[in-house]
Length: 621
Ligand SMILES: Nc1ncnc2c1ncn2[C@@H]1O[C@H](COP(=O)(O)OP(=O)(O)OP(=O)(O)O)[C@@H](O)[C@H]1O
Ligand SMILES: [Mg+2]
Image 1 (cartoon, helix red, strand yellow):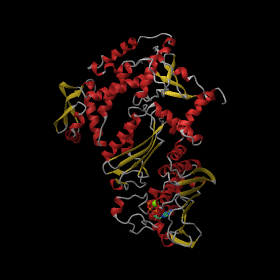
Image 2 (cartoon, rainbow, N blue to C red; image 1 turned 90 degrees about the horizontal axis):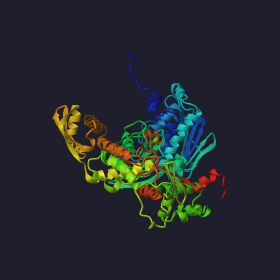
Image 3 (cartoon, rainbow, N blue to C red; image 1 turned 180 degrees about the horizontal axis):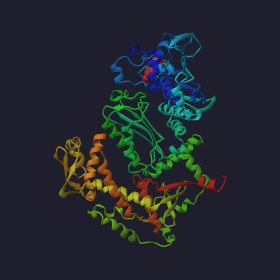
Image 4 (spheres, rainbow, N blue to C red; image 1 turned 135 degrees about the vertical axis):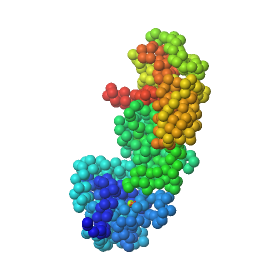
């Protein structure tokens, strides 16, 4: 058997590098984090050949003392923590003292730095089997430059895993973008083969921040995002969430930061997905940029080698906070907000005039026939080709009302909205006034910005659904005892969980009792779910509980049923509506939560501005 011996420092570091340095982008991440930790406000990143040939990062942070330069390159050397107590409440991005040593073991590294207290800069290079360092003077302003050349020159296996220059650069650019989003107050310049790719100035105002966010995520995201800021019990959540209609086929526009650290966390992803559940088209992914601030002592960052995961001391509170904040923010979006945000983005793109000016300019340039649109809607009724009796729609609605046990629960609220006419406010509402119906499917309306097109079935379905949910919440659950209780075989852990949290079932009308070590008895279900597979539902809820500490499955199920009731009860295609009816729907959409998308996540309305229409017709102004 071979004798035991100590590994050379380089080999030990190379082993550690296996986890930390996967590709050029991981080097950039570590170096940028160091610059941010050093308090830099200006960082320049120069890349050659996708990072394979050279990565050079120069910052104006506090720099490194001559005496510490060599130490910075050795393993387990850090200025950021001293004790385990420090680690438990760490607020810097780095803390392991491992990054530079790992990088230096698989590349040629030069570190040049100067501090406020030194007269000149110093440079250290690392070489040889034992990673000896060579120190010499080198001019440098206060701050630090790290140059990493020939990545993986001595680890051919790793080198083989590197992709093309373009692919590696894309990964690396993504890292820069994420970190640029995490620190709006820092300026970043990214160059590839001497060409400037991004030049991001420090952003202080909300407009400047939105501009940076737009550069990173595109203007389409910003046009379809809402800004939010919420604080509760020591937790702060801020940022932008994409409207459900702006969903993605991939989870590629999801930026989540915990105390400035880029994090991909299961708990976070779950809470966000749950918040979008009611509004997102099946299989689509939401887009968001979110910043969570939490007391560093309440989050453990030392759980993953690349620090991409965190562990919250009180995961359930964080989950609830994220879910409820996002859920609310998405519910509260009204057409007005969406239109304002779009104007806001155009304004950022164009220069910096306030939104109101832009709108009034468009107005001036495009004298639309708003006067007539603002006339009492009753005047329009005569234009409707055939006026269906509101009763006809009502009749159809009543068919689904019967589906429901308590008809009075629905009352007038789901009735097709109709306007009184005559005493219309003079202001033009966000979705404007209806001018026509197209092929029995779309409502065309004129508003201040131009043309609004509404998918009337989708829109009515959503408004009805929201009303049903509201009524359900107001009335409380109607429960129904089962004549023959259903017995459910579960694991012992699941049975104990059901016993421990009876409230979880009870609050939505279930009565679930423990019947044995591995069996439960369902005695009562909410009447809406009387035809559902309660056995499966109880099992799924328990598995959610054990995996995530919470479950919204019962509620989701109830919502599904309300949603399909709304779908059947909503106005169908090919139904002629009168203008007052159409206007009634528009007003209801403006007042209804989540009215921007139907129950399946498809958009319910869209705006074509005069500018867009002019472009279509090549009409200069
Ligand atoms: N750009 C920089 N400016 C100033 N000091 C730096 C810079 N980069 C590194 N350092 C110093 O070098 C030390 C070692 O850096 P290194 O990245 O290896 O470890 P760390 O940041 O402390 O922890 P981690 O391994 O988690 O990143 C840091 O603790 C810091 O004192
Ligand atoms: Mg570091």
